[in-house]
Image (cartoon, rainbow, N blue to C red; front, side, top):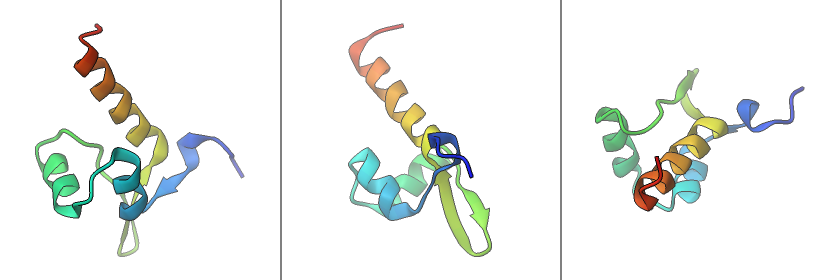
Length: 68
């Protein structure tokens, strides 16, 4: 079993906590606009790779700071 962020899966509640949003609708809207990582579908559940969510956060920080 891997113990790195690449293999950690997050449910929608954990994703919202990680990115600081309260609305599930906002997360799915961002995905439709192609501005947020798409989840893996496991059975009837959606799970996001923690590494992709953290990457999205890092990109937002870089954009907000004007760093290229």
